[in-house]
Amino acid sequence: MKQNKKASILIYILILVIITMFLWMIVFNNNSTLRYYKKIENIDTILLSTIYSKWKLAIKYTKELNSNWNWYTDNFSCPNSVTMSWNVNIWINNTSLYSPTSSQNAYCYWTYSWDDFLIFFDNDYANFSWAIYKTEKELLVDIWWLNFETQFSDSDTTKINFNGAGLGGIDSIDDDFNSDNYRTNSTWTVSSWTDYPDDNLWNAFEDDDVKARKVNYSYIYPNSWLINVFWNNYKTNKIIDENTNNNDNINVKIWNTSTWILYFDVDEKIDLKIVKFDKNSFENYWELLELESYNYSSTGWEIGYLQNDSWVLSFSDNPTTNDFIFDFKNEDYWIFMENTSTWTILYRIQWYEKTTMKWIYLVPFDDSDDIIIKYLWANIIKKGSDYIYKMLDILDTK
Image 1 (cartoon, rainbow, N blue to C red):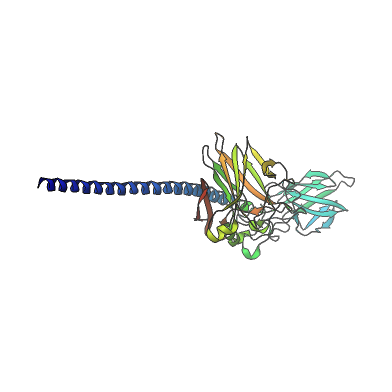
Image 2 (cartoon, rainbow, N blue to C red):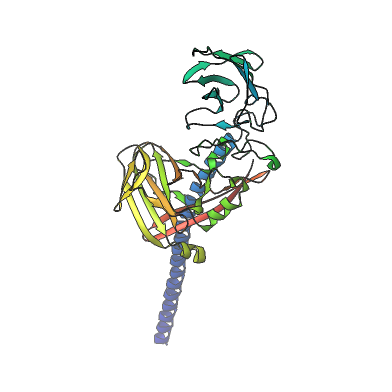
């Protein structure tokens, strides 16, 4: 009887031990699962934090560029006629405007006595400033309500007089070259878009409204991970293509050429990493399959064109035969930077087509709606050999 009782107690103890171990395994597994999901949650928070930070800067920049002047005004233009040496010289090239270089102002141009004659606008395109004739430059004087004159010291003592409001409201060119309409052109309504004129070197005038879609910039704090500062794929191509504000002849959409060179500006030390991914793998399976990677460490401020000399990266003040060529037609690229300085850094990224030096639309914005701006961004973290990424559409009002 005692033996049976001891056996029962032993069996009971064994059952309690088994139950305890089973419960312990449940708790252990739950804790492991919680830790696993906590890691995922932390990674997701990091990914989202960077996406929202980039979105805030991008939206702020585009809104500033589209509210930084006086909308569309057309009160004056190139004169339809001028008086020189008291002989009326009729305007020859109609209302053509030109920009000789990106650092000079727009000007009106025609020929007088076989010599070129130029009338330049001032810095904010709200008035005329000076004229050039036979290489002589003289300030223009507004004697009364946009009636300008100046005197030259050539052998004929040529004098100029013209009315700057002669074609006001007719040339469809915004007087300050800044219509705040999210487009490169001058006028407000789609039905009457008027592009600003080009010069012979294709340095076209355009409204600064579109700059936010061509320049990718942000800040990187010290001791941060490798931060994704640029990426392209079929989804970014789609949103850029759907943005009808990108349909102009001045800039090019990112996937339309295979000969892009990168212009980079960063104001502190960085580690730079460029990864080329398999385009088809991401488009068909959303898988980031690394094909090539390049690395570079700077010792200070870097500004210039990225170079690739036999897999060795560097920067050059001017384009060279060693320019790092980005083939956006056929490849997907992700660029990462790590701040290795003790200061917060500012970076700016933009691309040019190597043969024409035209800029590209690279920021995945769609601001063609009358009310809504859509912004697509992603962030990516490398854990071991794996790339973890998150992609998000964010909407905001204009």
